[in-house]
Amino acid sequence: MAQIDQVATKKTGSTGSYLGDVEQTIQTYPCFRSSLLPGIVSGAGFGFIRGMSTKNVRIAGNWTVGTFVIVSTAGW
Image (cartoon, rainbow, N blue to C red; front, top):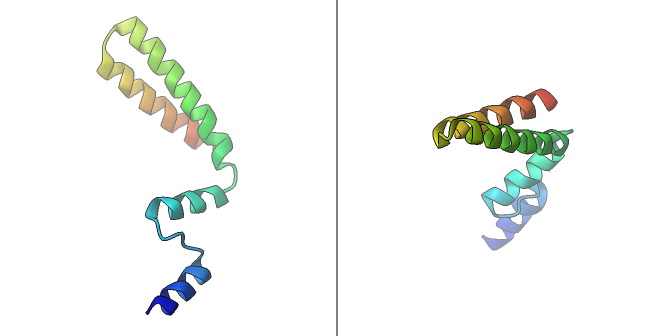
């Protein structure tokens, strides 16, 4: 049984960990990293600005996530 698992792992390139497999898969997508980094930075920036201007954590969090999703999707 162990030999079958080893063969399956070699064929698919599986790391045996779900998060490891997701990380390997995401790294194969073109421009993923180059779109993710600006999304994180802009989301944090807008969230910080909204947090300072409104003093409401929930609104700032919504702006953070929304900006991250929009910028990352647009950049990809």
